Image (cartoon, rainbow, N blue to C red; front, side, top):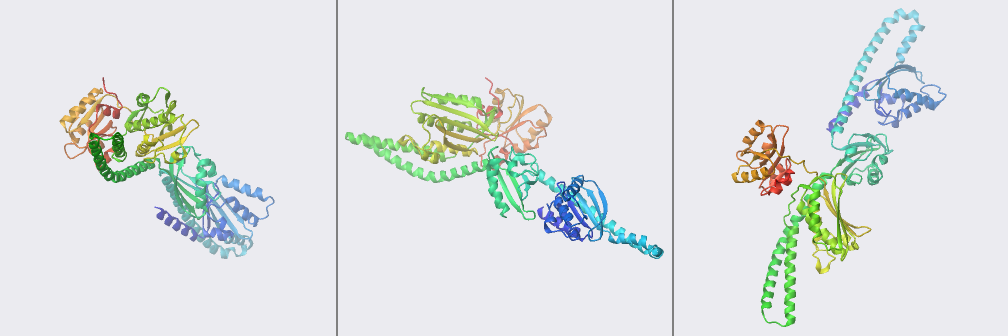
Length: 635
């Protein structure tokens, strides 16, 4: 597309240069868009005034100073009057004599989107003919016919030129409209800044990519449009682009917490820079989760062999020490045997912890109501805290339900609370804060009134096996917290506050679908036993249920019965069509749709289904189904 546009522009420029008349096009900001070669030669203009983006005001001042308009008393006032007349964008036609004695006609036509096209024609010969009519009337009878024919020929040539100019104008207008429409439709911010670091063009996507930025940046300094923090990140990169070096980079837009990718391309024709920026927050979250999954897979491969061999060694040690324990030994030897057995058992427990961290842990996000979740967590956590340590939970998230893996999150938060308990020692306070960040992230912050993290711990807190508890810690707790956050596409961080330690789990804030009210449910399942069990689950939640065993049967029911409010279908069904194909074939508007399956998450069909609708892994409980549908089972 870019090559075709460039070719079209080149052909248009070549065509304009072949026209004998001088031509210039200025935009609504009085900046030169295009000028042909005769425009330069007619007025003997320097390069700076025929380059796209050149100022109309500077061009008029240059011509006035050279005497193009004769003697002018007040130069600046004359230039300003010409600028004001140009800004009115009114059609005009004038004839004037230049400093060199030649005559030109100037015809201007406004453009629909602002700006105008101006054509300059040398009419010296026509003026000579008119003078001849006045001064040599005695020869009129002999020369009238010849001059009339020449004039008619000139008029025909001029009419042809005007027609060509009108066609060029139409093509330029259409080209600009197409380019502008294309840039407006792209899901990215496209802009151009000039050498003065002010925006000369911007589509309407800036406030979507970087919320809080100035909505109409054209003509404004980039530093004011983007704000101090964003500009402090972009300014060094833009300096490189002005120096002629293209660059692509990513940064965190602090006001919105968006992750933004920016591409900067130098514009050699104007000395400016083109800017392309995209919101890649979801891409970054997905990428982080995928990277963590790959790391865990590699770690699992490495650890499985080591754990197997080490487990065999521990088994031998435990067996030998057990036999020694049954023998009559000195008291000192009995103590050594007991210590060896204790160490071996701790090694086995450590192997289990390693298996938990590196083994297959799939993320199962489901609609989770935060208030009940945090209330249940408070009950669980308080039972592990002494009376001298208080626990406060502050939920600042306004959304009622989020898509979370409640089990993983609960384990992580409990791990942090227990760490905070150990840090507080005999007494203190622990606070759990849940808050949203720019409707992009959900932060769960655990802070305590303990002594805080040591400098070494701040740098290595999430490293596996790093612990400050001596023999009382395995060094895997915070590593598992970090692993959970990364699997979800988020992050984890530690810092010290004025009162103690502060650990934050940041997860993507994904609002759960609206709850499905009890109504008529269509259950599609080819197994009679499973269909009966799921039917009972749906009935217990207040639904009436109709059933089908194939996609064709289910589609016929969906088309005939308009009162269906919920569809729950297995992916693999009787016949050739899948449950996913059945959902995709449904007419609009569709009821709430859910899929269920026993396929592994690595199966391509599972992945296609998960991209279309929520998928429940079989087997599932009545509570799991209720969580997905956003309803509570009937008591």
